[in-house]
Image (cartoon, rainbow over all chains, first blue to last red; front, side):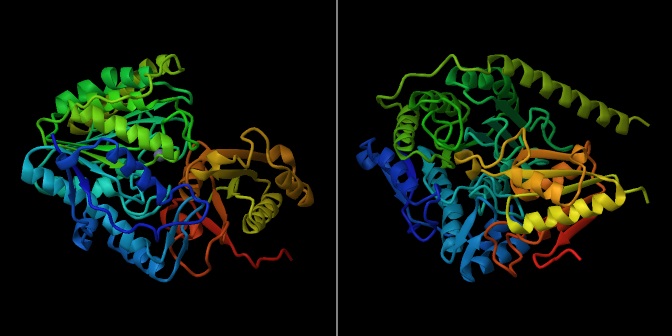
Length: 348
Length: 140
Ligand SMILES: [Zn+2]
């Protein structure tokens, strides 16, 4: 199976000295790809800049105007976490376009797996606001493009932070299923189990908040017990992954205890949700420890491509096992409440 | 219109946020309202926690004393998220603020730009009245 990646574009201008969301992250991720030694099985598609129309499927026009103007006025701090520079508009639109280009190539081949190593990351970006290091929501732009082609998209978000932007954008969209495992409490403060989707998309959001220190065994159990039945019922035609690697035990931004082996195992299980070859693409989100990022990208992609690799042992024994049952109870209670309000409204 | 009972004010340690807190405490003194001071813990703050979740920062306590505000009516809250979302969440029930007070600019913001202005974002999305206290405000 081939690996389709986005072609390199110059992202060095989106940098703020000392900020952990830095150009070296993409280099580390690409080193993880190079470690696969794929030869002719590695396909890099040319860089592509997302058009205004492609961005406007998920972002407000006013926000796009403002962000562009802000960058070209020299940029600065957007909030306590998020910066933009003069070059950020051009770099962010290339990051959003990278997913579109990789997906188009997967469609053309009807084969392969996609990996988009682009930055700035996207899953915190709201329709009308930048936040959490994110300017444009790359995975949402890709998802919206697939929706416009009549596809049903599963988004699995295993970044350690909740993808509040992605959740918000597709909150009421029945053809998108958003599944997130994340540390809680933690930034951005959203993603409780009781958030299950809007009126037209009930049970199309599956949040699995887990405590600091959570290990791979708990996350695997949570995905199997809580998410899998919902995914099976949804039956996606495409699977996109918000593949943040900041849930790694060495990452400074959070406190999960995952290893590169855990990412490989999660990737193996997520790949089974794709209906056929050429329908799975992974988007880099977080991941701020460069060595952990490199080894985790390597392990993840090796696992999906079915190649032998060395990875850290699976982690286990952390807290959170009792949370899985609690998360499920909260979800079911929220679903029941939504369904009963629906019935009340439809009963004359 | 109901009496002013609960004031929520954002705090990030910047001098603008101190100005906002000072204004909120004076208003609370006049109206006998309670004050919830909230700090939004952003993503980067995980690297270096600036504020305790359990205890109000000394600078805030000092400010309350300086304003002659009864500390028993002061509540300190730390919540995860960007400043705008945290302020809006805090102002919503159960705290249910009667007024939300914000400084004009927090740390490191550039003057005159719409993007990145917490006060403007909050004003756009809030359902409670918002007071934006300008940086230049001096108590008279
Ligand atoms: Zn993250």
